[in-house]
Amino acid sequence: MTQTTVYPKHRFYFNVETETGGQQIASELPSYRIACQHIKHYAKETGNQQEVYYIRLYRRKNHRCWSVLQCRVKFRDDQVLITGAKYIEHKNAA
Figure 1 (tube, rainbow, N blue to C red):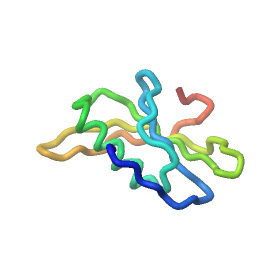
Figure 2 (cartoon, rainbow, N blue to C red):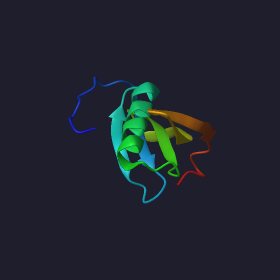
Figure 3 (cartoon, rainbow, N blue to C red):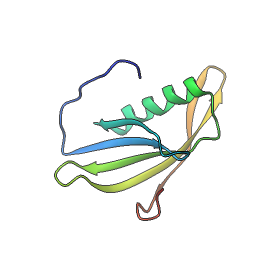
């Protein structure tokens, strides 16, 4: 997203990354919903349906990764849909 939004600090936060190149799309997001919005916006900008995205959940206290959700996107008409979402072991995550 082009403008910077400052979110309140919570106990947990989410980072969104792409699999190819490990590019970070967004960081320190307060919810999965907002993370998905960032993925949809990025996918619409790039037009890439093949990209794999990772939503990583971190605990703010020690900044350790607690879980990783892997997903893809699919374009239908003028919508961008999140598909194939599954939790993966963060030890196995890219």
